[in-house]
Length: 323
Ligand code: SF4
Image 1 (tube, rainbow, N blue to C red):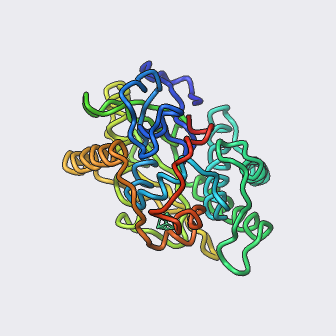
Image 2: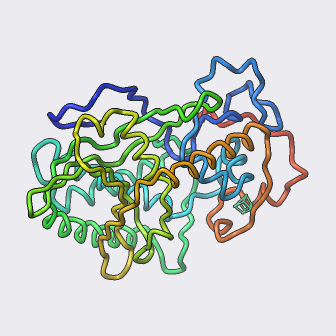
């Protein structure tokens, strides 16, 4: 985490594991049984949940299970593109924290460096070949697309007045006594000032999208979680400003656009999300895994193993990166 001179209440700064490497109950290293149930003697392992793992589990529980134990056959280009673009935005806001404006070249360089590091397995995922999704897609074309998207992002920032408070801010919150802590990180915390001089505390999650998304496309879960974390971290009481939860989306269209999508901070939405997390936990803990074929299958690096289900070899222990 990096932060400006503005003070943020002290809190647990555990940085969550990279996407896809959650320590959920069945990740309890060698103490996990073949059906994914965590034995009671696994108490010394730092067991926690993350939103990204609940999202994968609720999309396809078998994919979640396999990704905990087997290196993927390939990594879809969209996944590497998304994390590399995220790294470029992080570089932009890091420069702002240091009191300077990053140029397009610096951001495209951050994108390329992250891309290369992902392929080399430096971000917690085992090295695996990239599978380009579209027929005419290649690495050079994706770099060019990233550069156009970053140019659109920089243009958007010119119209935007804010003070960056923190980037990649880790959190660890407890939903209830029966659940392990929920960990994550908030991409961006900033105080935004409108032309009329009013300020808001904005928590933003970065996303890329094939087209201009609606809130329905994005879902409110991740932003709701940020809101709950902000209360838990004391951010809301420290700043005493209206809280805004939102997504900053840069489209991968021919002419990229930057879209801000705000999410209502509603107790009802939060109750639904909290219950969803509880149900995911119950399923993970009980070893409930089965295939859920969908549009996700084309980007799933475990489809060969999935084809063997339910006749599979005894589950291997979780990959070292996820322990
Ligand atoms: S191929 Fe599809 S159904 Fe099978 S594990 Fe992957 S996402 Fe799930």
